[in-house]
Length: 367
Image (tube, rainbow, N blue to C red):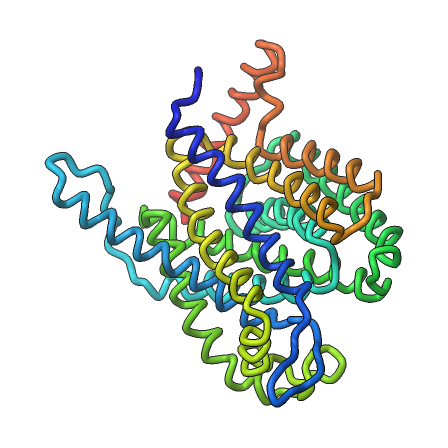
């Protein structure tokens, strides 16, 4: 079935804005500018302030949701489904996970390449799968377990590529290793967020834009308040500012004033995360969740190509192998292999999935 023009626009928007989201954050990190009180020029490394910007982008999804609701109420045939009554504080635990994971990933982005950053985020399916078995009582199919194992292999290949190419890209080996480990650690937290959302939030049939926006609200408010104590917490060599504190927000604003292109990069990051969430939700609704997953994987290629083109990193063949292995693992976990199976095998797989869903429904009813 051919895609409509609207579906093509949505797919293109998701691919482009998803790529801009990572590239703009890395672009900001690569700038050097003078800080406050005429301090020497230094790199713009303010991960926690960047995370605040990301949550501001998510918060804007809440505004989009209410605009849609307002327009929908004036329509003769409403299309926006209303949520069941729920307590907004249910979003607080997932928002705390999102805030912690995002902050860690922005710290890691300073230490490793944008393409490796994007590839290593594929580790989320490993921990999400394991946690869903442990806490949601889900039974994974054989292909999903194979996908997890293949994904682990892909992560090893990407990590090896980073170890070999890190020194040639101007990054110390210790920074590369620390950055990669932080990204994987962040995926553990992100997977906890996903399990919490599925367990406590999505059973209320909350509109996805409202869910993203509400989590963005909590993350924005809490992390903005945390910037105050972060301004005084010493971080020695971990920081990249004269005061050697965890986050010097004033220094960040001084750098923005001395190098306006940093503002452009941050605005690109904020706006792209809003459009990316909207496009992703729309692609799932208009096309399929599988298409969304494929587009999400393709943006890794876009990020890698752009990073090579602008000279942010050096070409390494192992990265191609790592990406392919990660893509295969993700495809297996998400069931993309099923259309390629023979008819009999597909019927058996669908029968197995039906039985597993019945078991899952029985478990949910018992709890």
